[in-house]
Length: 255
Image (cartoon, rainbow, N blue to C red):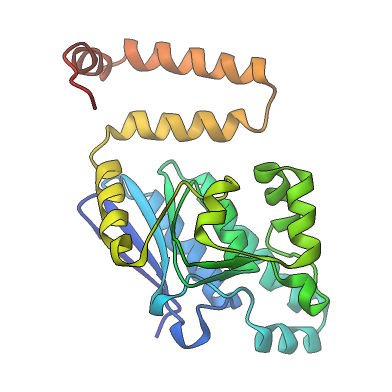
């Protein structure tokens, strides 16, 4: 059975990490399949939003230790292939135009936490168990945690979390800026569907432009980012979609 499933319907691409017996731990095959699924979804013009979720009630437990041990025995080049493949999957999230939503429940640790950090929006269950636990095993991050985490929460909180291996809940993740919303277990699936379905109805050109502006703006200075936004808003309103968008705004009710 493939380690990743992709299903596309109603403008939503649903990607499932499908190794439930291993809490969806990352192998090279899973990482490669995940990147492929993300890029296939991104290249499909019918897709407005991409959702990544783990099978079996867990998001992702991080790297598969059995595979890490095997690759270590084969040498650095083999070991490097695992981390390069996972890096490719995480970078694919930012490379595609559509927003990528991580739906997190159960365990999201190490690489699973790093995949969370790479995602555009995170929806999490209140009781999720989230941590970068590499240090608990004498390991160091290898999926972007040492670089993305301080950019999201700042160096103080990032170092505290990375050095301690402390665990966060979904509620904590929202407070820390690591997730957008958290929901109780009994409402989680319904609230996730409500949010994802709402995004799928938004104008794709507007949604994609917003994602691009935020992503590109974070890698440049404020002035350059404001220039990007100015060019984008003029192009958007002056373009073919502009008339309908301006009319909708003028006729708006509270949306």
